[in-house]
Amino acid sequence: MKNYLFVLRKPAHSGALVQEMLDIILTTAAFDQKVFILLLDDGVFHLKNGQQPENTGMKDTVAIFKALELYDVNTIYTEVESLQERGLKPGDLCLPVQAFYRKDIAGLMKQFDVVFAS
Image 1 (cartoon, helix red, strand yellow):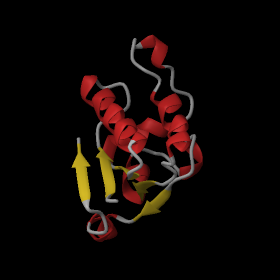
Image 2 (cartoon, rainbow, N blue to C red):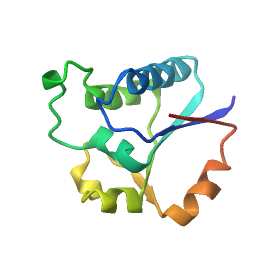
Image 3 (cartoon, helix red, strand yellow):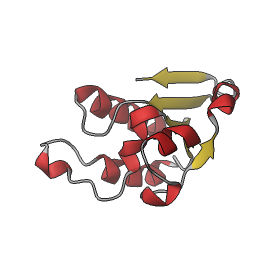
Image 4 (cartoon, rainbow, N blue to C red):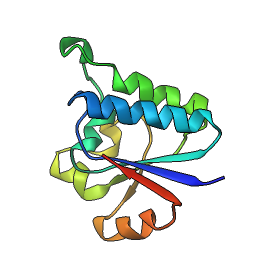
């Protein structure tokens, strides 16, 4: 079994690419692969509390992220600087995350067999 890391950099509700990536994450996890997620840059907005996707006609990504636990996707990483640059703290997010400093992200990524980035 391989370890998959999915890196999301674009904000929630920014278009079809984000929704397709979430579908790939769910599909990979459904086939009993080990799936992890890394939110960088505007990707940290995926978990921001208080989103209202119905106003954009897009899928509720928060609901999708919360459903990931059903697929044994329990680890979400983020970058401390990405949160800080956007005025967010881990407590502003709807799910717990493990935050790493920017200087440590490359080392984190090397731990995975397959890395998908959007």
